[in-house]
Length: 361
Image (cartoon, rainbow, N blue to C red; front, side, top):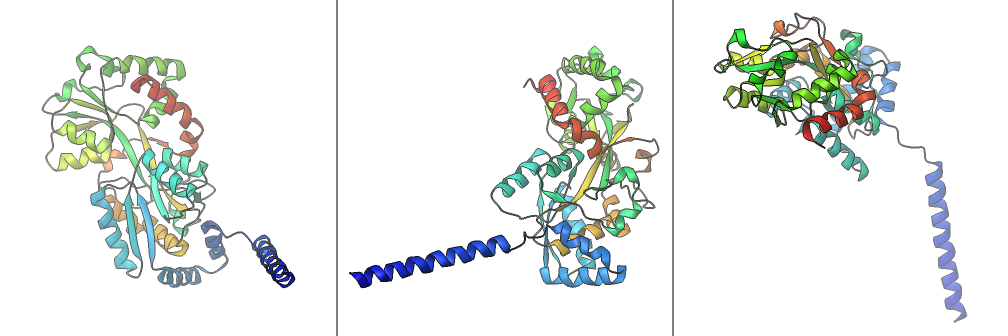
């Protein structure tokens, strides 16, 4: 019995020692570096060495995960051009946009699953992702070709593209001379029951309140809500319904989508209302990117002249200086850019105000 007790005692001591050593190792081990911290070291070497290092390490990683709000038919062509340049990096795309993007990423984070490397999304989503700690700053050398309004000072965001917002109408149902020319025109009785509005148009809501002033803006929104609007998620879906003649007007559409459908023969026309604004669509690095070097290579290429020129083939407006736009008429008039600095501080308030007035919740 005494021998058995002695053996148990020794086992307990051994287990206790192992736990103590393990705890000591855990306390001594430094916290894992974030993707931004890993990539920040590249600033200490020459541009040539930097590119060589990126390529070598990205080749070793072999893949990059891209959560994208690009339309499904645009993601693959975009990736294919990148892979012609860097065939050794496999791109794993996942199409997600709107609030679903933030929910997906936050759910993964809560479960301890760090699955994405790079994402792009609206300023609204970008603000939320920064708030939950999902992204990291990355000083891509390509940022020097973007103006101050298209990138933040810290390096979290750079505009992959911008989305000028227009009013759209079906030319079979509305004559050009009768199309609305101002937001006030939308309150006319003839448009009651004849308009689409996106059910997440928070940025539009915020811009108009800024333009009109809060009290006047809220009153305008209440009056507009009485116009029996059809609330639909997604501006592309609305453009397609508009082209099909489901309703004559859509208040908040992506300018490039309207112009693109026009070139394909759809009976659509766009009107630039005052205030004219564009939404920044931001490119971001995951804070815990499993493939940081491949992520950096992908971001650098996406912001390069080649990557930005590829974006314009989709009809989208890009912010990089010197790139030819497919629809230059969308940038002839100066627009107000809705970026993270604008929408971030008022996002919750704008979302609640919009939902209360237009969705009754």
